[in-house]
Length: 397
Length: 101
Image (cartoon, rainbow over all chains, first blue to last red; front, top):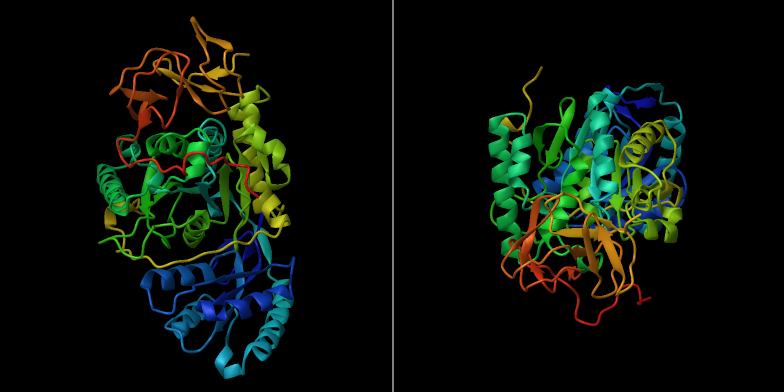
């Protein structure tokens, strides 16, 4: 594997120019700038809100300084509440080229697009010179998510991804699973896997928070399509979702934006702290993918039974299809046919090994199906978190 | 190959690994059941009688509580199983996935 060497010493698996809008009012201009570079590594991210929110500011900081990102163009309307100078300073401090175009000060839509396109064109040319250096599994962070789940997800794709995760951890990599809203009912099992008693307590508290949050909202992390796909309850969905994590000990508990410090399997707590505010924790799969990427994930393993097609800005998404019927119908969107296990055309071990091999190939530059199809979904909403406690992370070795 | 997959020996339900028409007799070990209705890939089938109020396990883990008596060969789903945590949301009766657009 070769990775792109960033000035801060971290290695990326992609070499992206991020065009980041700082309020919904600047989104169209950001997309028009990126549209000039269709098919090239220019991705749009952004925050739609006009009012400040520490969580989303931190998310944007982590995303703009992600190792897959080589340069950042910030697109501002001018009067929004986003701390654009703070974001710009953080990106500069990371050693990345950054520029800010303000629509109001530049003179409107057309002139801002023109200026943005010029800047991106120059930076793309510079990024071609970023050195690629040998990359080890210990440099790699992989996140996992399931979306469009059905009753096959927990039988094939998720356990196979769990096997790949075990291989990744054994090779020295860092693995993150999340969807605490889809781990309801499994508190005791997770606590048993925690590396320390303190961490087990933290995970227990995190799951209590999760249950109470969703109870207040009156709706679990469960879509009508899940039930149509044969999943009956959130417990049953959780059981399948949990299989993604494999069998390694859980060494740490993260919140969005926390980068895992060392080898091992981490749980990402995606449920806001404090009283219930701002609505559902993650309004769709991409909100979770964005959080996994903000935690440093170089690539994402995505299992689907019913057939999700999404990819993401910044990090490639590997689509593992759990359902053999869905795979036949949507082959063009799927990287791995895990559902073949149900038809006796392979074992979970074989699929797990295939996924692990694919992690290495994609990290080395091979494009995933969703990348080839130009899927670059992104969403970021309001949330609030308190920082993680000292017992959440492994002590420095 | 049997189209039923039991994830743990002690589970009272098995999972269908393909679509199976109503009336078909399917076997798993020494249990044979006749399917009460059309079964789709991923559906859960009762392998033994389950009484209302009983906790149902899959992969040894509780996945909910039976809301009705369930006979062997019946599908176990939202009509006879409820969550112990958060109610399951489904679309209005009569909605059929895959027919729209």
